[in-house]
Amino acid sequence: MSDYVSTTNACKLCTPLGACLAFRGVEGAVPFLHGSQGCATYMRRYIISHFREPMDIASSALGEKQAIYGGGPNLKQGIANVVKKYDPKIIGVATTCLTETIGDDVPHILHELGREWGGEKPLPLLVNVSTPSYQGSHVEGFNATIKAIVDQLALETGSEIPGRVNILPGLLSPEDIRHLNEISRDFGFHATILPDYSETLDGPAKAAYETLPEGGARLGEIKEMCRAAMTIEFGRSLIGGDFAGSVIGKRSGNKTIGIGTPVGLRENDAFFGALEKTSGLKTPRPYLLDRGRLIDAYVDGHKYLFGKRAVIYGEEDLVIALASFLAETGIVPVLCATGIKSPSFKNSIESVTEGLAAERPLALDGVDFHQIKETAEKLSPDILIGNSKGYKMAREWKIPLIRVGFPVHDRFGGQRLLHVGYRGALRLYDEITNALLETKQESSSVGYGYL
Image 1: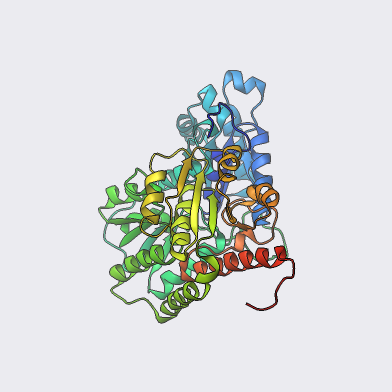
Image 2: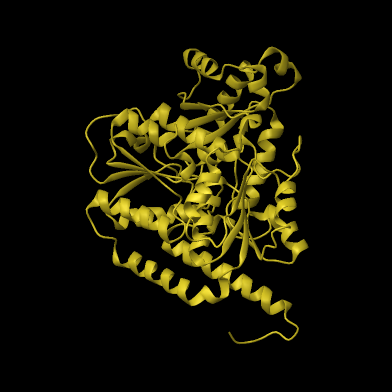
């Protein structure tokens, strides 16, 4: 692969976009971008296209004057306007490239605003996070925002709250979050899932438009997160790092368990094992049945999948989880790629595929779609697995694209894709198997009507 000094069709999105998604998963929150109006407009459009839900993102709307003299007055006025229009419980302020470049001291500006506040309504909670796009990706912005929320709000310590667990799921779908809630309840837990946009980004139809949709992680529970019996943080890239789970662990002394995103058999076994250990209960029978059906599907579909070659791309931890899952099924993940620069990505891919993959996967971090295409077309893939941005490659190579993760812009229902749990793995397994069967059937000169 050649070295490049520029990016062609990035395999990642803006850092503050991830912050907006994370803030949307908090009760009564309004995401606020401190920067130009264009940033908020672009991100609103991008998020709405995937989730098919309204998404308000406030902005300090800086112009040329503020770029020279600073954006503090605009930030204060913008927050005052949000309070007046939305009456939120919390405003999440994320910085953009512009405000980071001019050097606005956002924590100090917000402190000043608290001293000066004289509005008719009380000033809501303010959480700030640094998210310049030139420093990371949407996933890094997402993770930084969850850490900021925990660091600035989860201040209550004390006796353990019986039956309370924290789940830090990472960037998953609303359907994934609903399933995690269901699993937790069936183990007898009350889970604080942060973020929880299962309703705020995938809610029911309402008779009237709500400026602040119902749902989200409750602020009272976020403040009590350090009193939970256990914290489970998904994502192999986060294990041992300085993220939200480590903040809770250091502040409370309670145990934080870092596991891979639970896609496939082994990663789900680790997740359910953690729940069993903490609850003292065996996995409820419905999930054991789901696990058994997944294994049965592996056996039934092995002859269709074994030796097929897959290219996976997208968010780092989802790619790692998918590589683990595919290796279990007999598919060879020949290329695993992410736009995020990560020193641990290659080792993680090797770890989850070791002893299962017929050949060692090629793991590339910090790449764009031009580099992915350049590398992948030499590997003769049978299938692509990732977000909608890989469609042009799949079309050119006449192979199927299985859409997972974010964004899904050219299909309907991206917000309801289920990735996690034994049930999510089985859904994904069926989709992959049928896509490969359909490609073989359609490319046959005579076709066939029976397997």
